[in-house]
Length: 444
Image 1 (cartoon, rainbow, N blue to C red):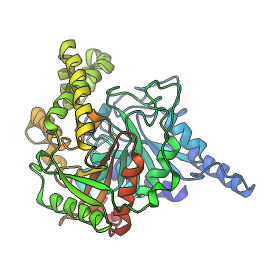
Image 2 (cartoon, rainbow, N blue to C red; image 1 turned 180 degrees about the vertical axis):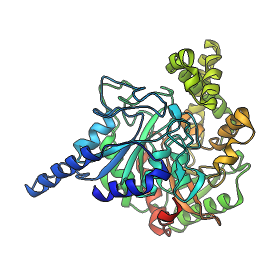
Image 3 (cartoon, rainbow, N blue to C red; image 1 turned 45 degrees about the vertical axis):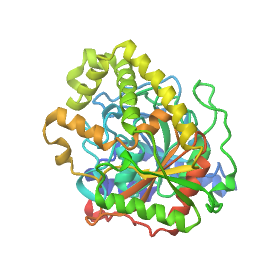
């Protein structure tokens, strides 16, 4: 714990991954865990592991700003169920992590708490909205973190920062005690250094929660699934719009990752996926309408407190009619049924890019004003957003570094509630792939 706190003190002034560091509470908890070990007691599989949580998770005793200028923007009667379960398994809370304001934005910029810097290269985006979660794990400030994902907000920063990020199936993990952005599309999941760590955190936080009506009772599957060979698994590779406009280095890295799965016996099959634009458009309508509803008060009473891009996106949502919103929900249900029936009849999982390019600079993302930035946000998250609309499990895994030293990543997407296969494929890739290493402290 002292090692983590020392690294936070030394590096986070520039990295800006934390909003709140609970040093005294973390050290007191670490001493208590030491005493338990001395007495021969182990709280659980995460005994003494330092974790940190995106600042939209309600943790008793700590403020929850949700990336806004209001220190206690979100207060809940219930503590975040996922945090409570991790603590019960022995984990220790380091603090609360920086994020894009109101979880709205794929880059990691924040006008109130500072732009989270990419640990591999300052001035480049860390990905959003779980920006602090990815940067803290990549830079070794925490051993794992929780993020949330409404349109890619776990997978985008994981890919930008070179870590593992899992968006579980919708309903797999309780969202009680987590600020909602879009109740139809929000997911909570782990962000870690390895696939095995992500699997361990998922097993800890998954499961039905009576305080969340959307949480599922579906079992996770066998504990040993991670280590099973992947020979014979059918992995689908898209032959259409999912590769349009993809950076050449990113395309080559994803192809290399798929080849490594094939080398281990996976059967790679070319599949034509439904055009992602339809799902993206439908998901945008749903997300904007729901987020404008959830955050109507601040938009109405204190819009000057919001960043320009967030204010613009919420205002767009406020203008969506009930008819358009309900039609989007109906179309989403039909597209989901079609996608699952047609695609997963042929393959067990999909392997696809996460981000269209290595992490760009903040300067490039801000160029051209608010409207240009909002359009760029949509383009950057176009490969992740469809799987929020579908509610499918998706795992981002590092697959190399660019010539400029920035991480490259790909995502593995599975059937509903089949995280076991997704994690199994990710672990198999990780096992035979040279690690991208850790970002040097001097970069920050």
